[in-house]
Image 1 (cartoon, rainbow, N blue to C red):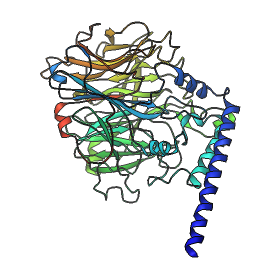
Image 2 (image 1 turned 180 degrees about the vertical axis):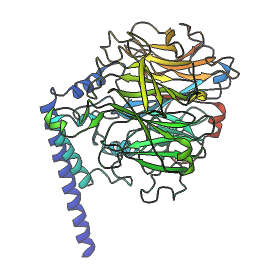
Image 3 (image 1 turned 90 degrees about the vertical axis):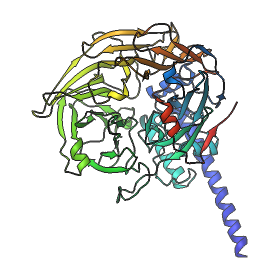
Image 4 (image 1 turned 135 degrees about the vertical axis):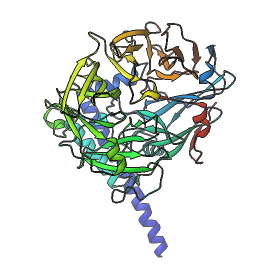
Length: 556
């Protein structure tokens, strides 16, 4: 009798949850219909879904033998190039933002014999699993948070969590997309997104990709008591800095709900979190990147402030550029390493927003030089007309003074910077960028190029494009085996045309910046535009941690 009642209660509960889920779905669809033509972020999202450069793909492919035009350089063989980016697995109910979309990694594995294999793979995040099980988009996205209607979507999302229509996650509601960047640290390739912990992935010998799983999140009460790999008490930026000299990893995570709004961490070269420190900032801001020198960990407190009232008062996303100055904070790395009290030296510059830093280093007189891609103003709801410019910051921690200078006049916007990773935190002469002036233009007008800049004299010294209609991705610099100069190496970049007919990996001579690539590796399907990439050497490839399990792309 008791068993029968229990079965009946379970069936009633299942029926109730099914009905509640359908009601919430109908409410969400109705609100999407009503708000469809009112939001800049939503317009951007619709353009992305139809734009041939950004339009998502849904098939995971594993191709063993790719066509190679030219010859793969010897220094690349045995390694692999990976690039991450947003790729929505399901059609959004309403709006979509550029930063939405599930993480999809595209990888080219270079064989010792000069051949190459390719695979693309959805990172199996908790978010991806929830929506894969539901067979539809279900979780809250940035694009949903626009205007008054966004408040209703928030309420629907809360109801889904409360009713456990969205299954409870051990890490709370930190369900990120792992869609932004990749980093190699302590035998692991990590897929990163600033709203969640990193996800470990692995490239197999045949070029297939595998998600090993999310890293463990440390308990806030006892963050250093756990021996788990890179267990952080906070989410992790998509741009941590790994010191090429001692292997330390400097990272941070920001919060928009509760203080402390910022926390920084130091991770050993073996992957153990050595120290986590809360940092007092006055308001919740979007903090995307950081920098490091031999002496300092550099934080960027830009005035892109989180304020949910904006959804009602201005009908926008809940982030807005304010008029206060930008603050640059220098954290003494030795004090962080030795467990000493942290006193951050803050310096102010006129208001700006910085997505990406280029590099930074200490000078002989004790000051700091930092190059950044700087926005004069920034609207998170849409990117047209907003161009990042290359700037040099000179920071003096002794006096607290700071100055800035634009390096290139009248450029079309440079971003996605890369330098020789072995010189991160040290003086560098060359940096490589994507010219993004027409990155978000209509497909018929869009184009981009790889640009090489001499930072010492602030001049463009090379530019490579692939013709009208071809869009280039971030150029990852890989040095030659025995380099004779800082720029003796190659740039790796995915190239896609505006008709979706051709995608290839270009291997460009970084020294000469010749218009003719050393090699083109043709990809068997369209590779959408993405964000940031990584090259792992043959030695790093062989050291990859095999933790078993996970999900693997092996689809021919």
